[in-house]
Image 1: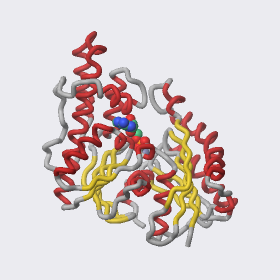
Image 2: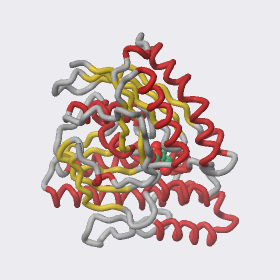
Image 3: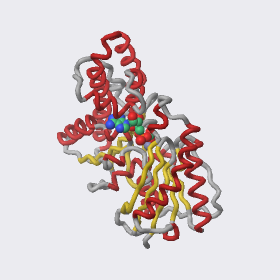
Length: 347
Ligand code: KG4
Ligand code: ZN
């Protein structure tokens, strides 16, 4: 049975809407259209995301984006079979906008709605790429709020192998960038600057690299970057690219080595990288080289689908429905889950 799924993402600072077609069998669902509005410019003046402003902006953007994706794919609201939205984790107010709009649409259209886990969206986003993975695989989930290594045996079959005990990798990029005066969101800016720097210029710690487990810690690295920046004083401006390159190298080395350790531990020969930091070029280059040497296949989402978007939410919903999830929600009551562990969900 063919299903048209409208996906809505509003967990943080991006409003994303997309349409995905599921053919209902084992075939990989296809993306018909997707549209995104990034709030980055709006939050830039404040140096980070302002939750109340984020919620209000989602309200303004979500319906025009829905109209846009329907028009672009030649569909109408009446063609939509299921409305999917991000139920969590994320900012409570921002999540409520997407959930409220999705449930209102579902009620008006008399169609089922499905709340999706944001990280499951990231995790399954490589299935939208030209080189989709096959289960089982190791997943390295690296976003602004999460850093996790997972064993993924199928939709809803997630086992956390290791995770950060403090800051996430994206946070390490963002906080280091902020104290170098690179603004928000710092990850892409730091990474651009790093291209002109010498990664061996500063010796920075590789936290938990030899801990023997698959956990991460990035808070100490951020402190080391701060100490180094203070030590440089007036020289910081001239050495910023070197410090950026050294910071990026430290984060990437830990991510790559722990991912290889996870592959060794599980015996799996396939890895999926997802989440905003997955867009980092240095990470991709290092991981590709390490995985080629270990004869491991690496899969990434398309670059433009690494950060938050509606396509991954519609895709996760489509794959859940294909895996047998009920198209529930008969009364259109909803809640959101600002905190929601990924291994708490099944199909
Ligand atoms: O997955 P995402 O869009 O949002 C969350 O769910 O958190 O990830 C955003 C994070 C931010 O910390 C951002 O700085 C980081 O991904 N990021 C990058 C790059 N692009 C985005 N970090 C390093 N290099 C990049 N090219
Ligand atoms: Zn995300």
